[in-house]
Amino acid sequence: MSTLSISELTSLFEAGQLPDGPFTHRDHVRVAWKLLRHYPLGLALHHMTEGVKTLAHQRDVPDLYHSTITTIYVLAIAERITGSEGLDDFEAFAAEYPELLGPSRQFLLGFYTAETLDSSRARDEFVLPERRPVKLEPSLTFSS
Image (cartoon, rainbow, N blue to C red):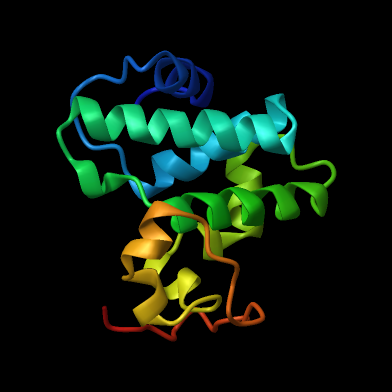
């Protein structure tokens, strides 16, 4: 999907018509960023949620949608958009906030324990963060 422009990718995502092929973490973040630039937060979250659920159903990957992960990423991206006036280009935004595009497990463990992330409750409904966000050093990694 990396060959598609962010506008093309987002349009196809919203229409439930993504082509076959991987829909990467970066693609998720690109779409969320574009949705948040176009819609108010609640509507952007709704579009992201429904799009990932549709994708999961189409590709027969029921575990693709995780409510807590989807929601915390949309909220984190929205917060950074608010704090990044003038970053109207996704690549500039991504360069400013690389933690959003790094290993998602590493980012998520700044907010949640592994036990919570792996729970069926967190998959089915949004769970508020257990931890204050931790600024992780780029070289710090976690095993999953």
